[in-house]
Length: 371
Ligand SMILES: NC(=O)c1ccc[n+]([C@@H]2O[C@H](COP(=O)([O-])OP(=O)(O)OC[C@H]3O[C@@H](n4cnc5c(N)ncnc54)[C@H](O)[C@@H]3O)[C@@H](O)[C@H]2O)c1
Image (cartoon, rainbow, N blue to C red; front, top):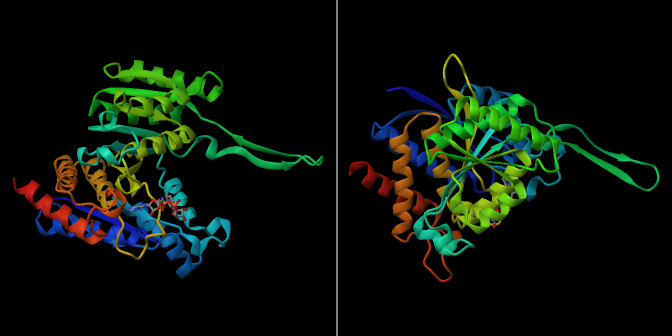
């Protein structure tokens, strides 16, 4: 059995609390002989700033590059609001994404039947929902140069952001989307604004070319990004995989997140290029939520987003598809039994804490794995 090296970066706020439940899961898998994980831990974000005056150390960066996958909690909080911009907690996460070349962000939005009433849409619109948003993560308007604010000297200022994409950046993210679709319901929706943006024209052209050349068997459709946002809240089940640039992906994935009920339920994966020699890829897995300072230290955070992020690591970094499915089934089973952390409970209903939810998922996992 291969040994997989994991770097755990719990971070700040509820990060360490939800990471504790992933550690419980790793222990369970190791002890049961299902896998052999070796873990190392490091500081990132505000906790790293407190210790080293940077958001991530060079030593941790080296460990991240050497690891088979990085499992990340969350960073930030009011305590660090005043620290210099380049060492703010988020800078640690951005450095990891950039230096590991994590260009593809995968955000599934799955609505568990037991939680369909927690969505802001009607049950029939979201029950059984299972879509995947693939967001380009290292290019586009968040990084393009020039990026400036200039004083025009007449009482006016001018702000410039630059939306820029090269062919190769669109090709590689399109491939990730088509490959995923082949393992799902075989449909990709590509979203841009080619009606008003040149980058949208190129995006559309390149996605079509990749499709024609390599993925003719996959159904491809195009939707303008504004229309896609509207369709996501009208009838989200029409989608399988949605692929889009950094900016539209940021917005559309947040829209999709509300379909499922709570931030505490949403996992994500960020993937780099496949190494031609080793056939492996750099990867980082993290819940979509932040450090939730309002509930940190109270033991009431929902660990499911973090646990499901680890499930994505099993699926996308280690090819452990069966075990990843066990985790999904264990989460669904635990919810079906009625266990709820406060964020997903109906008003007045009984709730459990982070640790109890983590233990319940393992108990259910034990049942699923034995059956
Ligand atoms: N990737 C990251 O590390 C990341 C992402 C988003 C925000 N942040 C940072 O986190 C801090 C707080 O930001 P925010 O409040 O806007 O977003 P947040 O995601 O931390 O919290 C938003 C709301 O959702 C709740 N929530 C979030 N995760 C939960 C969970 N697992 N269980 C139960 N409830 C949960 C919180 O209690 C809060 O009410 C800020 O410093 C922000 O910069 C970090």
